[in-house]
Image (cartoon, rainbow, N blue to C red; front, side, top):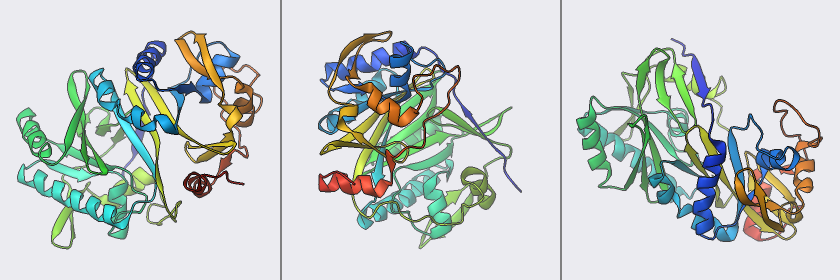
Length: 359
């Protein structure tokens, strides 16, 4: 059978209030978050955020990265879902630990009789390559507990091996995050309704036209992991027709924090980590980007429709390089231009590791 995937992104509202709430927390922690991206474009050109903008983008520089990540629990208390993304390549020992963790979690869920399966990149890696890809960041698991009691038993078991956080929608559990050492595992609750079969991710929903359970079992050594029914068809729908082709690694060494994403009430807020090397600034969104430091620094506090925030003193440098005719008002998003500030991820990583600018 073939799957059809319908990926639905959330609408947004309340963008100004969310922006202010997030910045009030980071400001109190002394973090210098600088407005960038399409959010900066709208604020500079139109005097407000773009009306169709689905997320808010702020730069955080290297000295503030750890302090920003430390705010995750505080944001969760305010009702935000949080994700932290890393880029780079893991050591083989970390990959071995990740595989061991997958198998350990599978054993736990089998003992608790919780129907489950892998759904993300780890599933693709294990099914195609029998090992985790060197650039694997997080792990994704779909769970289908019979009732609240079974879900609570699973939570108790997970809390014995790591730190667990919950996310909610309409006062019901939407997903769980388990942090164990260098790994973060996202557990999504399986849903069956008129839209199909699937789960709700951070700011989007994945709906398939056919059931994902009962799961299929695959073995690695003496242990098992589980995948959606008709695994090949699922992977084709999830990752495209070329899912069987193993990609080349983008990195040879190094691993850095790429971003911390916050989501609440239909609004996404991105803290995008920036690394200054010489007269250049590097960040990864979605590929590696580089711009002269003067494109972001210096910056100063300015009053906006979402309150006081840091804005680059020379925003036109960034806007010209990324949005071309950015000064021309538009009624719908026309995208960033293909510009020379987008470089290979490996070049940016090497510049960050070597503490020198890339040519």
